[in-house]
Amino acid sequence: MTTSASVPAGSSTAPATAGKITDRLVEANEQYAAAFTDPGMDARPVLHVAVVACMDARLDLHDALGLSLGDCHTIRNAGGVVTDDVIRSLTISQRALGTRSVVLIHHTNCGLESITEEFRHDLEMEVGQRPAWAVEAFRDVDQDVRQSMARVRTSPFLLHTDDVRGFVFDVKSGLLREIDPA
Image (cartoon, rainbow, N blue to C red; front, side, top):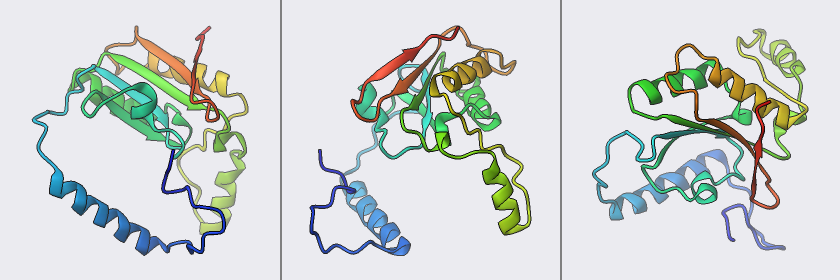
C-alpha cells in the first residue's frame, strides 16, 4: 500500500510547509472536481449507521469497513471519545437524518494513552486560559470503549440505543476486535 506518508528511503523530499500542503490539497480537489459527478444522494446514510472513531490518520474507515460514499455518517475526534459534541452529532444523525445504529471504533497504540489531563494544565500555563474541554485520556482502550458505549446508551437525546457496538481496531493487523459492554 502506498500512502502520501510513504516516502522511499533516501529520498531527498524535504518536509512541506503547512501552506504548501494546503496548496497540494486544493490542487487535488481541483482534479477531483474535474471528474466529479453528482451522485444524486441526500445526507441520509444508506445503511442508517453512524460511526464514531478516532481521528488517527492510520484509520481508513471506509476501506476497513467496506463502506462506500453515502453509506454512513462518520464522526471523528481524538480518541473516538463520546463527548458532548459527539452526542450532539449523533442526535442530529438519528433524529434528523434517520440513523439507527452506532458503531464506536477506538484503536491500538492511541495517542490518548500516552498523555494525561495534565495536558490541559500545560495549555493553561502556555496560553493563560484553561481549556473548557477534558482531554479524555485513558490507559485501557477496552475500558474506554465500554465507557463510550455506556455514554451513548444512556443519553436521553438519542432515540436508538439498542444497536450500539464498540470495537478496537488493531493498527498493525487492520482487524477489529469487538468489546463486550459488560
